[in-house]
Image (cartoon, rainbow, N blue to C red; front, side):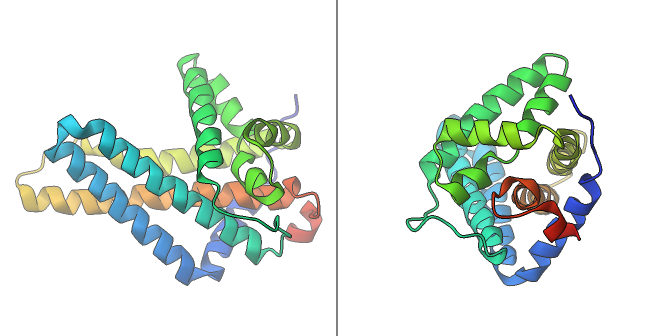
Length: 223
């Protein structure tokens, strides 16, 4: 097992550069994600009995946005996509389901196994969309391609996860005096959290371009 972390910082920088290079598209994706996050919080607060429906709607919105953001970066990089490229929401959902179950179980088993699985499967969605693979094929390809730099992926994935989860966790520690303060906190926390989510999605695609895409090499991206 190799522990090579040297790509973490370059990929993080390149991820932010890619987001800035198509600021209009990513502003739209980010704005929709924040609205979806606020809607999720409001839905759970006001309609707790509709938990399943609210959860499904939020998840569906995130899947569409994840595929949109991933394809945007792939196209900007000039990746030759399959002729019938689409958002492939069902397949992205399949990857997300297996990813979530595997990583979630790993996190329960002393945390480190979950981080390791997250790193090894980090490229699954961009691989799925760029190379028209099935769910299991994409997960397997991501596993193979991250063997040398899985620690780099882990560092960036954990950074994105903490960026996403800490604003939400902080809400349980804050006492809000009135509805106006509650609305302000929902907007603020979701703005921070969804920025972390978008960074994580974009970073996965940037990693794919670094050493996942069969037509790209790390040297071509980072010099």
